[in-house]
Image (cartoon, rainbow, N blue to C red; front, side, top):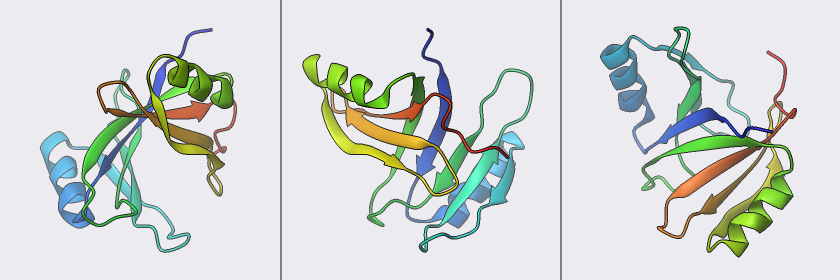
Length: 125
């Protein structure tokens, strides 16, 4: 089974500036999501035939600023374990996002954060 990149996130403290920047720089459609638990998050929809949707939002720590991508895997726990055997480390254990997918994050041996999404767990629009 292939493991495609299915989502990206752009996280930073000034989410309005980030949303405005990407909307204007690339003509992306930006849709603010309802705030569950006070999280400032918007969907970024690049459109076109080849792109994937992503998100722009605030991190748990306002000083956080990063870009990450999410890979769809058939078994999120097995993927985290495999990453660990290859020199990676779990950053965020598997969790279910309210009205969303099952996700997790790990660091690769170079310190890059990579997200995982459980195949078949995406909420229907």
